[in-house]
Image (cartoon, rainbow, N blue to C red):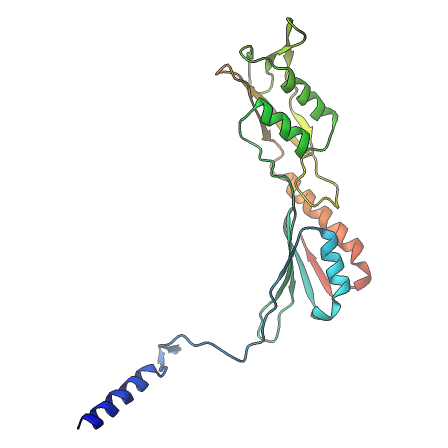
Length: 242
């Protein structure tokens, strides 16, 4: 009896482990999560940081590409290379490109020293940049003042010499070129509103984006132009989406 009972329990366990297929309202369901073992393996995507590396991979590893490939420009600093649809309508990601850039953040207040360092290390040098650096670098603590600040015009007090001070008009708006996309292409120029706050006797500064994000589209267009030029010899089997 014990032997028969054990056999019965074992059979019940085996039956419980078997997947059951049922149909409800014309739809097919399974009570177990099944995994297919006949699916083609996908490659692990590479990660690089330059457009040059992407072009080199596409030109040098043609045997790894499918008949149709897609370059998706997801943002000014991120691109992916993916395959066209396979027989089961899946795609394979072969490479991800993430630009290695300084992380400039607009629309926030920073102290004088940090602001000047960011201007020096995260922007292309222009006349507007030099004007801002001159104002920000010569402002004297405890003397910053705003006069008739209507959102456009702002005055501040700067140190001119050992003991002399003068009120100057803060330049606004300004055209600046932060490093925000791949270095192989021209960095897009943007309008910023430059503001100064000295309410706590410690001058702070901010750059507020004033182009509505137009630079993003400009950067994507430049990336697409670069890739089209450098991959022209490969014909039409690579689609570039910006």
